[in-house]
Length: 299
Image (cartoon, rainbow, N blue to C red):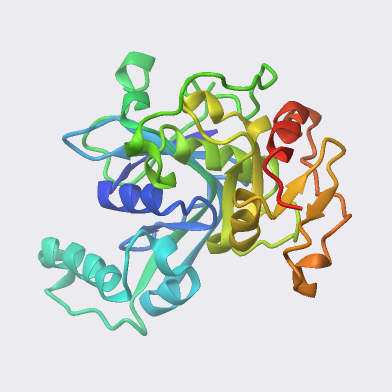
């Protein structure tokens, strides 16, 4: 089974740009009491008009009703809003637009409940990869305002595991516009794949806090061909910085090496350990890429 739901474009863009892909709250301004979806089922994001195309998906974790303040406290920016005030105002705006139903009430953040569809391993696609439902013979009428379930073959499914092994990218790096992580082609999809491969845990520390996890390229990013699961590692943000600055590397046997320049015992505890590999062998890091990265190590 899979499902499609109309999706606020601001929610989608904020999470995509922020790199928040796991344990995000696809919140609903009133409780929907979702029961049909099972763990791992895909919920596709139908971006609202005028786009009216699917821009990605998340994998269902759980559903629960929470008060507005508890939803903010639990998910924070993973609600797809940059502040608590903006989050609460978004809920209030819905009530104001439907004043005949709610009687123009002002919500009490401590008692007003919303629905929380918790999603994992979200992939946020670039606009060129958005999918038209009609072209895939999926009936999703504009009149659907909540969610629609499909108990059939999923025509949108894209393999989580790359079918071919990763080959080092020898093409020139994309231009200056692509240097920041959040605007690299395919980054929103790449992180979703890496999170799933590494089961949402930093491969060095085991960290699971979503806000602290980043998808690191082994061979530095050059273009969208770099976004192969075998060219990625899931790292805690501080370890990612050490890795990108040549103060940490992982050899072809998947052993961690810390530079002598890193004297802090907190980091040296990882020196000589093995990384935690993905369960599926075809998701293991490319040894060619790991060897290439070694050349930048600062002893």
